[in-house]
Image (cartoon, rainbow, N blue to C red; front, side, top):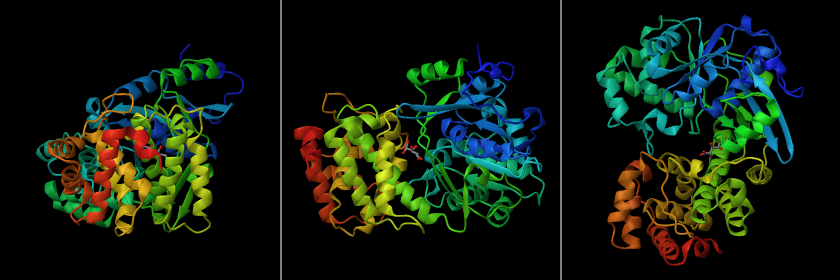
Length: 481
Ligand code: CS2
């Protein structure tokens, strides 16, 4: 039996149901990017605000790229389940906060209408780093991006996140307050989105660019929860736990954190009800999380892929990769300033424990995707800050990524290839080089990823040595410190 409003009360007895009357919900929030992360993170904070009695915040979910989730949710009266797992412990709940789900290419007028609706004062987004069509090293608008070129030519029928947001804003009555809350893993994510949206708007409608700069609220946020993409095993597990078939089921870790800059243009859900921290300065939280969690995650992903380890937990259990992850975290720690009340050492220990959670099937291939967007945010700040001093583990991680991009093989002989639309130009440079030092020089000169400031020659020499070790001895040779 499928999960729906009618069937949800026949879920197993220990499953928590939405504790409020869903028919009283009104549309209060548009979310762009209806993936698992949003549904296991911001949607649950919104659910908590609704449970606390404020029924204004029904979520209008929009998927810009894939029709599967909106279709699955529509067939379930927009209900879905979230199962938190750690070791043998698991809890499952059904979430009721989503009241509409659209696939943007099939409902563009409705999406733009919702963004223009003055009764909706909040937009949140999780469209991944590449979803903002930015150049990774400078976070400026990539005017060569195919979707941006399309949207500049057809601003009323846009495809990109920026294009869709701008089309909604152009129709929004002037003076209707709007807060856009970016929840992607980028430093200064709200400020970056403001800059990108203003750069896009400048090219189609300069007065709109002024509104973006002066009137919109774009709080910076730090979001954290490990939410792997669903797998056949996780779906089966949920079926057992729920007693109902849920095509939008999520299995994730129990940990969750949301730190939000307290600067909204109008009303917002009381996300504090779900434990969100509203604060004046999010940057230290972002830097700590992006470098230590996401930075180490990416290193585990490439090292794990090179060693043929499928999940983060498998990689952590491997003596070489597990020790390597700890080393990378230590290299990254040296440039992290803890936010007030935090101890970087304890925070790092807790992260390593979260990575060891064997109840999650978090695939290394998933995290390895989009490296050209992630590496500049996660690793390069620490390498820049080291001013040429050796960061041995982090440098091996960078070499491992370049080795993968070069199309080399894993220790078990598999060709390594990850989804990353930004990678072909960098990969072509690496593959055209005639030696390891040449390959490193060509890669570091790829400004879109590595920036225009030159990198120290000793770093380049060390990377070339690591590439040679990898080619000749494989990952096991590189990671045996
Ligand atoms: C991961 C993140 O896929 C990735 O790149 O590093 O999705 C990570 O799981 C989350 O940011 C955790 O908060």
